Amino acid sequence: MSAARWPLELTRGPVTLRPWRLIDRRAWDELRRRNAGWTGPWDSTRPPDSIEAPLTYAGMVRQFNAKARQGAMLPFAIDYRAEGQRRSVLAGQLTISGITHGSASWAQAGYWVDQRWAGRGIVPTALALAADHCFFTLRLHRLEVAIRPENTRSLRVVEKLGFRHEGSRPRYMHVDGDWRDHEVFVLHVEEIGPGLVARLPALP
Image (cartoon, rainbow, N blue to C red; front, side, top):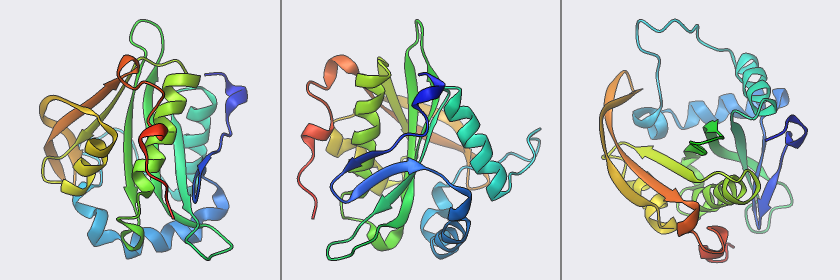
């Protein structure tokens, strides 16, 4: 991925993926505060011996965009325009990380959505948009999603899009204050036919 391709926006119907902006700070703070109980059990955390210092919101945005310009990740804010509304609102986050080309040609996806918009197909749409970009534009071969086995809502997202269960990874990632087991779901480019967006129903 060349640096010239970032910033990038992807849209389908009422769902738009776009870069994070410094001016999103107030909306981000409100979103995270209101969803603390909803996302907390699934949020990644730093282990006590981490050598990385915590990031401020501004530091996160700068780091995200720097890595995106380098082609290492696609850090998207998810905007959603509800039916009858003229403006979109910040509704969640979808990040493609660990983008690797060459002989590996893979990446990883992670996501969450505001509880008040859950169940509207926003995250499946966001993941489908990002996956098709990874496969058809970046020419990656493999995309994986690691999910805690207790996270039934997130499991439904990959099931809807046809991700294949590949296996378990014990104590795979530090989440909600400890090392947690994850289940890994995968798609290879040979498995997606015309793409994941084509598998989606129409959204209101």
